[in-house]
Length: 325
Image 1 (cartoon, rainbow, N blue to C red):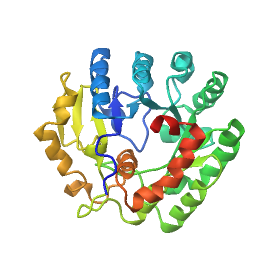
Image 2 (cartoon, rainbow, N blue to C red):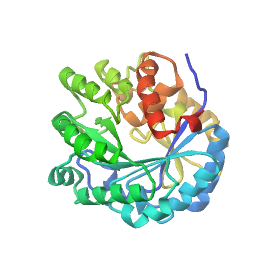
Image 3 (cartoon, helix red, strand yellow):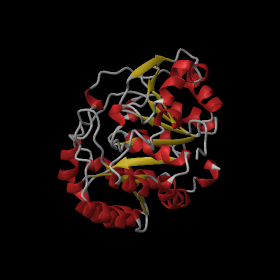
Image 4 (cartoon, helix red, strand yellow):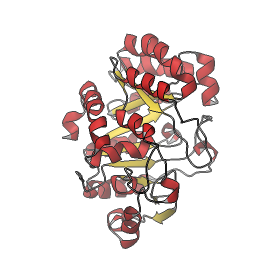
């Protein structure tokens, strides 16, 4: 049963440029412009009309955009919940400007060992994450640690949790890796590994969407009965100011927004894409978290129920439940 008949999330790519070269991501390889303030203002206006609640300013590395603080301020003034994930390299320089503007601030960290983390990210950023945590705390911020989980780094969770998250009272977000397009990130986990992951999700200051685990056990999205509602739950805007459908990772078609996102979204072409969400051949077996999380939120099914306890846990810890209501 469909619970919410409108998009709830916008993944707003402010640039595809990145100052890291993660082994499980190819976005940093793309040439890219930066979004303009004029376009951001126009799109925020229309996103509000469409009923979107959460804006994820993403990339690439979103802090590479020199006006990222302005975008966040505009979004906050219009009542959006804001979220941003960074590798930490630029946060120490920009922390004061960003203070109070990001509701869900995530620092990417996949190991408590400097060399291991830096190798996976393709750049020396571990020390910057450690510095960013201390700066954020001094500013009264409460960032999360976003840990990308593979079968081969499950053993790293404990040290990150014990040595970094608990002493700093930070939430550890466990984000299972996923494969897409030509990127084989090693997102497949064994049943034993999924059980271990679920165990960690029940620990103090740890957030894991249990719907992700259930979906992987079920073999991912099934095109005959799709759980994916990417096109109808999530709006994806590119740095070129285009609406990407059905999602960024598949990116079958892009439409010029040209200051008319509200009208464009309701057009025949876009609605045709929405009718095909989760049903395309490339959608078979998909487990991409960026779209499954909002998909679980808009329709009551077994994944909605599996995701509910962990979602309530996270929002209670972050204090964002009031804004969602």
